Image (cartoon, rainbow, N blue to C red):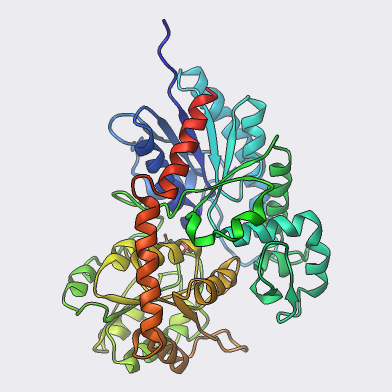
Length: 469
Ligand code: UDP
C-alpha cells in the first residue's frame, strides 16, 4: 500500500520585505495547521541570499524547504534612477520567474516531493498558469485589505473608465458597488498614477492587470487568501463575491522573522524596558519609503518637542532625508529623549508595553501588526494602498488618525506630528482611539485563537488542499 500523500504547499513571493514577511509567516502557519504538511518557500535568488545563510535549507525536520527561483538577474532589482529600469526588471522577473518556478515544480515532483498547492503573493500573475499547466490548484495570497482587493477588482471589471476620467481630481468622490463612497485620492496609486505608460510604476499597473486576468481564468472561482480577519472587514467581503475569499489573518511571526535588513543595534528593547507603559512614540516607514529631504530633522524636532520618549527607524538608504544633520543616529544621540536605529524587530517593538503610538506610512503589514498589538496609529501614507489603509484606520476602525504632509515637498512638519501624536496619546478624544485599539486587539486574539474565524478559515483551506491530492 502506498503511503498517504502529504499536502505540499509551494509558497511564492515577490522579493520585497513587505511581501516576504507575510509569505514566510504564512508558510509557518500552514506547517502548524497541518502536522503532516510540507512547505517550500520560494522568492527570487538575490533576496533569498540576503535573508538566509548559505546552506540554510529550512527547518531541521525537512518539512520547510527554502528554494530560490531566478528573476533573470544576478543582484535583483537595483535602483539607478533610470525611468525604464523598473519596467525592464519586471519583464525579466516575469519571463524568468515563470520558467524557473515551472522547472522547480517539475524538479520537486521528480525527487518525490510533488507540490499539491501553489500559494502566491500579488506580483506573480503567471503563478496560477504554472500551477494549472501541471494540474495543481493555486490560491492568490492577497496581502492588502479586502477593500483594496475590491477596488482593483471593480477597476478591471468595468469601472476603470470612470476612475481614469477622474484620477487627477483627488477629491472627486467615486462609488464602487459594496463599498462606501471614496475620494479618488484614496485609491491605490497604481490605479491613479501608474496607468500612464510613462509613469515609473507603469509595469506594476500592468502586472496587477495581468493578475486580475489570471484570476478570471480560474474556474469555477479563484481562491484568494487574505491577510485580514473576517470581523475587520465584514461588510466589504460581500464586494468580492467573484472570488472564494478566505480571511486568514493577521498572519504574524511565530519565532524568528527573516528580513532583508540588518539591525545595527539591538539595545532598543532594553531601552524600552526602562520606559513607562504607553509612553513611547515608535516611528517607522517600512522597508521602501524614501523620506523627503529634511524629513528626519523635522521628525526629530517634532518628537523632541512632544516631550515623549521615542524610537525612530531611519533606514540606511534614507541618506537624502538626513541631509542637514549628516548621521541620524548621531543627531539623535545629541538629543535627550530618543533612540534612532537603522532597523528593528517591529513586531517585538509594537508588542512592548511601553509603546503607546505608532507613526507609520500605513504599509499593510505595519497596520496589521499595530492592530494586533493594540497600538494606536498616526498615519503618514505615501503610495500604493497606503492612503486607503490610512482611511480605514481613521474612519472605519477608529484606531488612529491621518497626518497631513506639506503639499510642496511631501514633508511631515514637526508641529503636525506633535498635534497628531497628542490626538492618540493625549487626553480627551484620544482615550476613545486607545479604547478602540484595545478592542481590536482582543478581536485579533479571538480570530486567531482555536475555533476563531481565521483559525477555521485556514483549517478549511488546508483540508480543501488535502482533499484534492
Ligand atoms: N519592519 C521591521 N523593522 C523596521 C521597519 C519595518 O521589522 O525597522 C517590518 C514591519 O514589521 C513589516 C515590514 O517591515 O512587517 C514592512 O511592511 P509594510 O507592509 O508595513 O511596508 P512596506 O515595507 O511594504 O512599505
